Amino acid sequence: MSRRARSRARDLARTLSRAVATAVGSAALVVAALTAPAGAYPDSPGIYPPGSSATMATGRGFDTCTAPSLAAMRAWLASPYRTANIYFGGVNRGCAQPNLTAAWVRDTSAMGWRLLPTYFGRQPFCMFGTKPHRYTATDAVSVGTSEGQDAVARARALGLLPGSALYADVEHYDRTNTSCVLAVRRYVSAWTVALHAAGYLSGVYVHQDSGLVDLTATYGSSSYARPDAVWMARWDGNPALTGWPTAPNSAWAGHQRAKQYQGDHNETWGGVTINIDGDSLDAPVGTVVRGFRATSTTGLATRSGPSAAYPQVGRRDPGSTLAVVCQGLGQHVGTTSVWDRLSDGSWVTDYYVSTPSNTTFSGGLPRCTYPGQVTSSTALTARTGPGTSFPATGAALPPGALAWVMCQKTGTLVGTSRVWNRLHDGRWVTDYYVANRSASTWSTPVPRCP
Image (cartoon, rainbow, N blue to C red; front, top):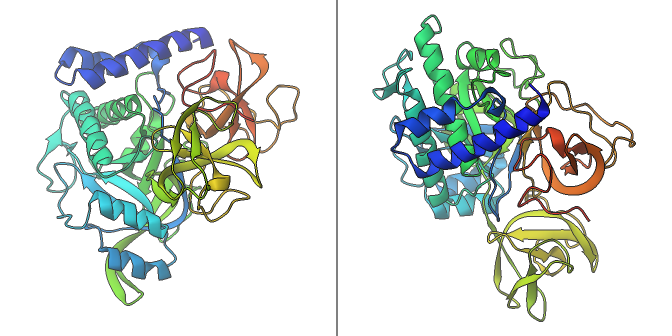
């Protein structure tokens, strides 16, 4: 399929996604969203609103059924883990969550924890186990759509902002049942479309011998929307995120993988014992606001972009609390070129904010990124600057990899677009082959690069 056809299909997919988001009860629209023309999938664009950003977690994490108390989370800062799973919704969620509130999310994030939001919804009808609520190939689309929308509502209520990755739990199932395999693929695709329409990234927790196999087999299929990240269960004690037996390294290769490598066991840190599973991550997780003070002596201007050249949209009083979502690059002010994006979508220079550093990015705060899947049929070359004349650098991004876009700048014409994306690691890729709002011009709310 031509890139132009892909672009037309992408536009249709956006329209259908919005229709699904506003017409949950319409079965016809739900089916249409899944069966849009071939080029709409596998890479469906995320529609990021202002004040959103993705967050990446790397290293070790743990998951446990009930969210621990704040005191336990504070004690576990002595552990090697820095990401914790939360079961935040779903009709099959089995554990009570007395601690899991918006305040808990805010306070654990302020401690430095990343959160891995997991939604334990309906399961495939051939699932191994006793979970009562299930779906079939017939209702998988409507279930995936409605549960995706419910997950978004619950995530927002907890303070998990757009740009967060939400993971659908798909337990181990019988792959010999072809109808059940079809049900899983339909459910995950509809879940992905629903999350993308709301500006969230789509993740899925799967077993290495069932869900991972079947989603890998349709990784490039034009019939299904591809999830942005996979969290694979294989209790072999090996935390490696490559060399998986049932998925090639080229699939979900752009900071899109997590692995549950160790099953139920007790660990004690800071005098607190918790029963956990062990995880390793290089994947998107939840995005949460952090509060910092305005340190200016006069009113601090908020702007529509990371520079004084952008219009002023507000002003914050000295000493007031700023709801900081992420940090990006912009105009140099004082000793720094870092600007902070606030939850209302506006920007302030970091020079007058009480973040840990006023010269560079602050540890614990994510970079402002707006990921889109690579849509090219071959690996996408990354370059040292915004144009094809700049040297290639680093590994190319395979089809389906997330391009973690920080900002955009005009560069060499590729296809229908002169827009180039600066990635979180400083490399550049043409925007023409990245799934976002446009294949020809700027994509809101991505800022312009300084």
